[in-house]
Image 1 (tube, rainbow, N blue to C red):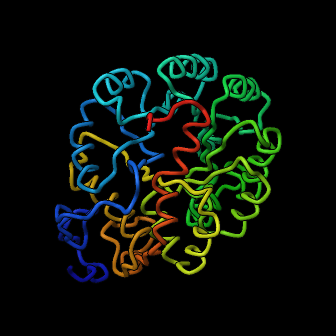
Image 2 (cartoon, rainbow, N blue to C red):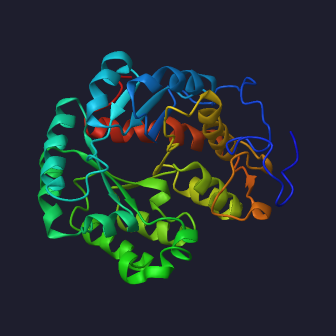
Amino acid sequence: MSEPLPANQPAAFPEHNRTSIDFRVPMPRPKVVGPVIDFHCHLLAAHHAKGWFESAKHFGIDQFVTMCPLEEAMGLQRDWGDRLRFIAVPAWREVTGNWLDNFMNRLEMFYNLGSRIVKFHMAPQTIASRGYRLDSPQLRPFFREVATRKMAVMTHIGDPDTWYHGKYAADVPKFGTRDEHYQMWENVLAEHPKELPWIGAHMGGNPEDLPRLQRLLDLYPNLYLDCSATRWMVREISKRRESAREFFIRNADRIIFGSDQVSGDDRDLDFLASRFWCHRKLWETAYIGPSPIYDPDLPVDQQPVMHGLALPDEVLQKLYHDNAVKVLDAVGMGFGF
């Protein structure tokens, strides 16, 4: 493996492989009984699927719980339905007008396609653009509908600390503070303490503060966390390797693997492979070395060094398979194994 690029030297390799790794070298499957499930990803179009599944197969990842536009879901289900389950999402670019009514209609259509999870994206920028918070009265009908249908909820709350200390700090009245956002989340969690399985995306949006996450897990027994978002996890989990490893082991029944992989017309097998490679190295091995993926939140000369957690086999079994099966089966959208 090559050394990290010197500071300020122009990249000789693409941003998804700045260390010139051969991602096509064979990698043993995870030591998991049953399929490996990626619980948080974005396979956005049917014509992206072939390359997506080729890359996933190479890294031993079998099945996916994905977010995609409703308009693409039917084609994906027809051709790849044995490997996919869908999360109900709004039309992402629709932020004004009757987007709430449209979201409710899409919820119904996703439900008819078998979806039993609904995603609420409540990052600071989304709150600012849409003018709604997770605890806004206008969203209460959604939560009643979700509860009536016995669905699960996934939420994106918060964002990286680097953003709160950077672009959000420049306009706090517009974007709010992290404490405000987490109080917003708890306002709704407290209203649904048991009946809704709840997944906090991206380690609950705050891998920088494991004590905060522990308090939430202790207080809300229906809450799970997914470990999706590659650059974010590589940076922050590696930074606190020992406490993060202890956290994953302590909460082995409550953390679900997710990559946050996003497909695209310009994202080839190697781009997809870079994300899968990082996740597997981060969770399964004691790898210490430069991240192959350029992190735009850090200066060129301060790029992250990965510190793998080398999680025990019994923890990986729950992370990659058991916990996802438990949640999916609870809402009636399992893969049938």
